[in-house]
Image 1 (spheres, rainbow, N blue to C red):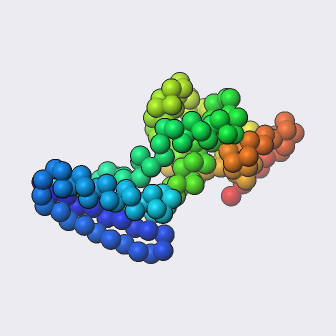
Image 2: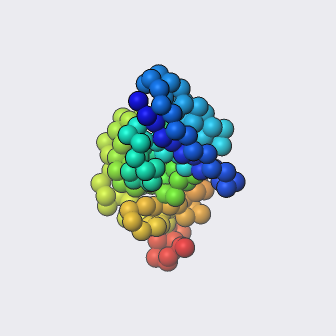
Image 3: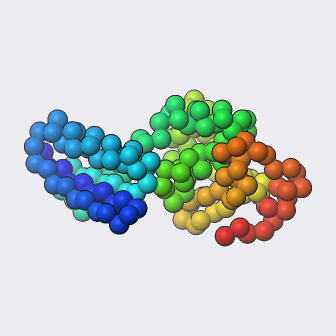
Length: 173
């Protein structure tokens, strides 16, 4: 089995690995890479390919995908007191940002909702969260939190209806 992997950390460090060996040896290398990412609090990028293909985003497995555990997602929802899809999406988007991702997309959100045992949101829920003042679209299907969304996700502080209306009307870039 041949494994190729690359890690790019925020401090401009880049490590590339090529391993030829048993499946167990390759699994050990992948576990080590995930450990490095955990030490960096999920910041950075890591991709792996078992076929020896190019290691570009989208063509290989993103090794950050399991860094935000189901238990951590549940805990974040409870800590914020998120009870609606708008609030839950906001918390999940902030978790993704805190882990070093550029945002959260609908496909990942769908998976995360299912894994915590909650019915996944409709695509319109992201736009509703945007109109509520918690999210902003980054384009290409990615969403990030506004300052109000980050505050809700970390502290559970909700916007008043008038604040939500004001935040939802203007673009926050």
